[in-house]
Length: 100
Image 1 (cartoon, rainbow, N blue to C red):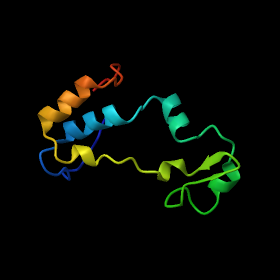
Image 2: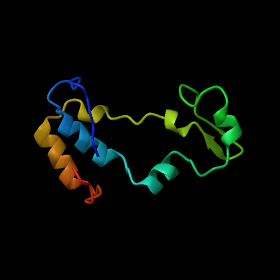
Image 3: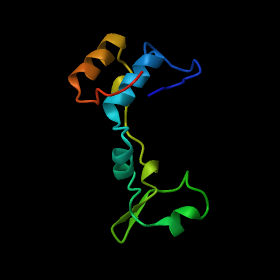
């Protein structure tokens, strides 16, 4: 996993801390991404029209559309420092197969 912030990281968090937060909060395995974004539900006609991003996330007939528009609240990390983020990473069950 690689995160490039182009120097925009704020506060006490470094680019490495931001990478670790992503490891804790998001399951980045391909199958897990497909499940979390509901990519295996056949809904291509609706999502192909008028752009994929910036649309309201909705559920129609039990199918989730534009699930990627539901942002995850990561505000709890804003006030943390590197030591706290590292402790959160160690306490989590994130994948240990990352190649950094």
